[in-house]
Length: 117
Image (cartoon, rainbow, N blue to C red; front, side, top):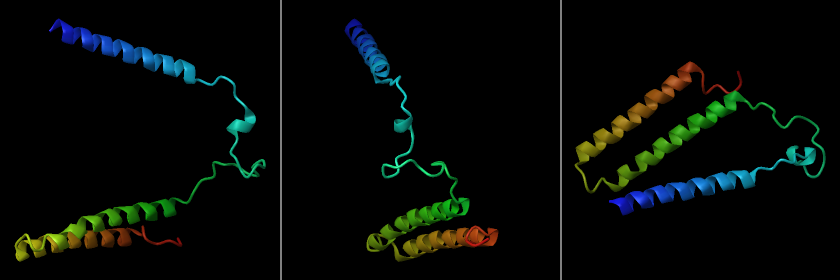
């Protein structure tokens, strides 16, 4: 029991020392304006690199990702048709598609899919 306790304490001490040593050695204290500025083909940037992006585009991209993941959840239904009851398979698939259609209708009704507003 003492050997296990000793090995745990030794492991914690060694890992803590390695983390502290890595954080001390990794810090860069010299700041250079050229290294901190964004790189734009070797030229000084003309504008700010922190320009805001379209929130509408971000919302459309998130909606696309959500529906893309849900479509990948639908794909295994085709491969398990031979292993399950046809009625259970049909009800599960139709329920999942119905939930997707209700979500799509809600997003359309809320105006989330209107690009040019």
